[in-house]
Image (cartoon, helix red, strand yellow):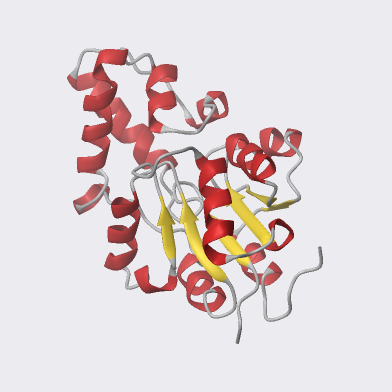
Length: 216
């Protein structure tokens, strides 16, 4: 079956349930470095774009410590008890939809972090390409690159993200936007940025991209 559609998924907040683990580890980092920590999940709405660097700024971590903070998150969230869990239904979604769509990850995280985490679950082969922070350019650039790589028209390309900046990146690239309301940012904020679609669970997203192509 020839694949004519492209589905791009953010990683943190779409594939993995990273919001609380990131907050927990950020609290540990701040405590270890004698920095105040008062963030809650609601503060994710203040992050634009939704990256660890912006989270550090909102948290009040000094700029000279941003790289060390990023390294700390990288090391603590990839293994052991702090490993970030996948959202329920994501494994089945990746397995099923990769058979009928070009399926890629577009993330502010590092490609190898995503690939390694999915490999732990036996899912890495269902993702065709990873566009991460190790590539030049922002998410809009990566979305356009994916469309070029797979020769898919913007009208047949969907970017699934859990942040306002993901919706904006899809619009900048000319792709359709899908807001994942199970992730980092609130439904109210996502709605204000007028995505083409908004779903509240991976199951709803899975159903939308069933065997029959979704209507435009």
